[in-house]
Length: 185
Image (cartoon, rainbow, N blue to C red; front, side, top):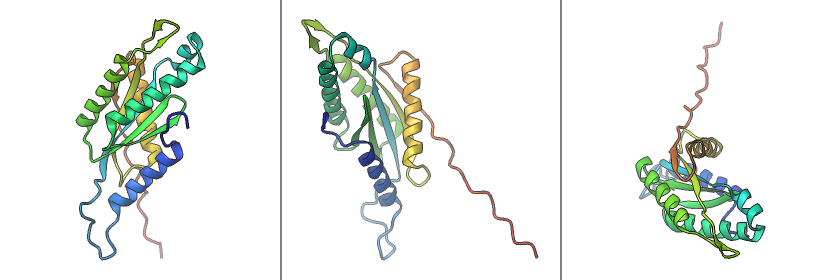
């Protein structure tokens, strides 16, 4: 309710629908026109030092920051992406059909937009920044949880590098079931 964005459960459902839509044929066996792209990117964004800002100002200021950043995430990624607040100060954006280089540019645009916004509280200006992790995802090979985890780990890498930046992560190789041995007679 605070940000007006869908929450984690809705995001997982949207990713599941993407997987279904990108791998499902029409009842007559044809692919839908146009087919939903099976590849895309997942952007995972986390506000930097929101807890410290809450302590230095107030919870009301933190809520104001969350609302504004949610708006910026939506503006920078829609109508192409599906945006959600995963909880706390974490946001995710599913970008079906978007390549990694393009997703990086979108992520950097978002970092820059958040950084340029300097909210004022008690007559003082405050700097706000966001760290972003991006992974390329194939809907036919990766689950929503795998994608979120990989993008979250990439976001942690952006924070380790100094925050207010974009880091690209890698999806783990899909698990393949072991080969079936023929029954012994």
